[in-house]
Length: 174
Image (cartoon, rainbow, N blue to C red; front, side, top):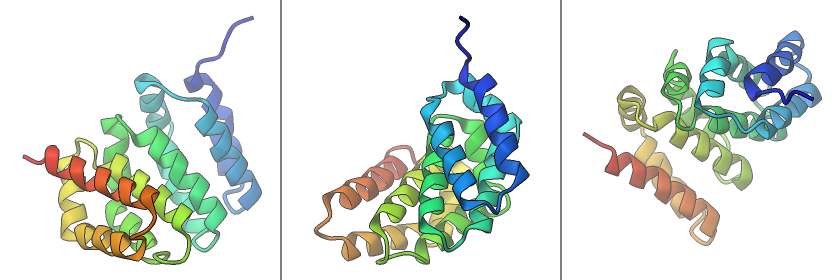
């Protein structure tokens, strides 16, 4: 039996997701399926080329107030953006970093797990992408991270996630 590479496997999942982006259950299931694939760099590049990042961004727009769908989409964005420059460019397109920060601002203090997923997605989007880093700083990302740390001062997972994001931002700054 031939084992399918993630690049071959995600295409039907993306197709199903695109067919009905308003279906919250379908979007969540698709995101879970995509995350199970554990893509390498070439798989991530293929995902980007297939319009996967744009599909995930569209799913976020369709499900602005559904925390479970948002969590699944942010987790998938994180997985497919991490260590893939092409994906960070697509996430940052059309004020993508600002939209991620606005989305985070809308949930601060209400759902820590969703907020952690957004922080991870933002961290991946900033990875080695100077334009996204500048947008993050310009649009108040540092202040937002400070607010998260104050809001969740006793939650080690949030503290760790924010510290990693800010630490990477500082260490990779030019």
